[in-house]
Amino acid sequence: MSDTQEPSLDEQIAAYQREFRDLDPQVEQVVSALGRLNRRMSVAYGRQVAELGISNSEWEVLKHLVLAGAPYRLGPGELAKRLGLTPAAMTHRIDRMAADGLVTRDRDESNRVRVIVEITDEGRAKWLEAMRMATSFEEELLQDLSPAERGLLGELLIRVLRRVEHAQPDAGGRLKGLD
Amino acid sequence: MSDTQEPSLDEQIAAYQREFRDLDPQVEQVVSALGRLNRRMSVAYGRQVAELGISNSEWEVLKHLVLAGAPYRLGPGELAKRLGLTPAAMTHRIDRMAADGLVTRDRDESNRVRVIVEITDEGRAKWLEAMRMATSFEEELLQDLSPAERGLLGELLIRVLRRVEHAQPDAGGRLKGLD
DNA sequence: CCTCAAGACTTCAATTCTAAAGTTCGATGC
DNA sequence: GCATCGAACTTTAGAATTGAAGTCTTGAGG
Image (cartoon, rainbow over all chains, first blue to last red; front, side):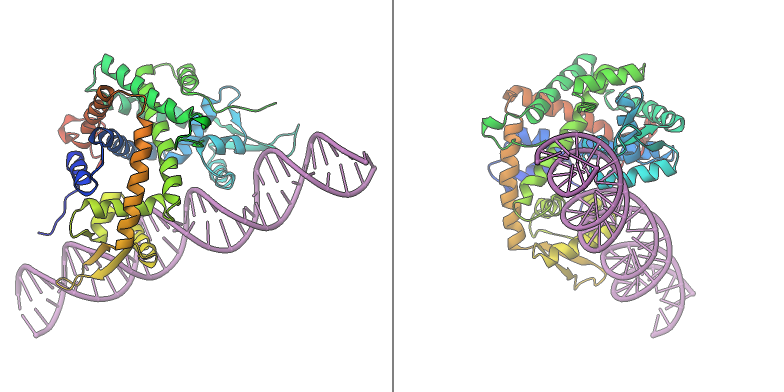
């Protein structure tokens, strides 16, 4: 039986320490747990929205359009920036979503270089259904934490996040330019 | 100036509450922070390892080979399982990495259906360099947390992770089958 | 032995992304 | 007014991934 098993998180950290001496196990624990958690979550989201006939990436677009607030429109460039995609990828994605009836794509009549992407009623309905599934999943995910622990976890994560998002360019650190 | 800004995390959560009434802000805070953090981190890792002439996905393969322990070999199928890829994608990835001299690919002589992927000295050297950069980045990332807070964060994340990884199929929940 | 099913990878076609070049429109300077 | 620069998007070619079909090897029955 040369079957190798997917190592548990603890085993993985132990293996790292074995292969790489100067490793802070506490830091590694946080980072590894973050990575694993995110991958599992994204698989879970993908499965759920697949039931609605959309993909994770289409759901992302719908989310950002709704988050933009009324009148629920954004340009391809702005969407690309928020989603972390190239404009070219955005063009293709909007093509597909418009063909599927999730969004409309129109030229801005007041400035014909710009394009306006707007969510359709169908897109909105799928977004809502996806949100229902997502929140229910997320609720279940945090089930084992008390309200106080959830608050604490959120606060700690936000402090780490701030370090990345507001990285001072002058601080000389390696975090420079993570935008 | 029709310039829309990337919303801050707080703005984003407020927008969600505006558009979707039954949302637990505490849960949303945790989930949104997790998502943002992971995207920033993966961009950061990508930039760092790019300096070594490898991509994030190649680094992932090197990591798993080293984690496997001596003699630092795994089959394509096992690698694919651990990385969450299809076997087909793994074949291509190994092609490229072998062409770049990061790994070797050999047929297992004791069972000629199997293939053995082994890290090369060059691959090992790049892995080490990448680990140095990564740990330095991670240390900086958690700089604002005290040791106690780091431990707490790690513990909370692991409790959430356990919920996903050891999801009891009988519990009837939506977490079923997240493997 | 021979056959045939199962396992481990590979190949192929189609999807989705990126980088770079191209297009179109608007604004600026003369 | 006209030329030109820049902005916003699209097109194109190439890279990486997936799902499905194909190949090769092993091992179990007959």
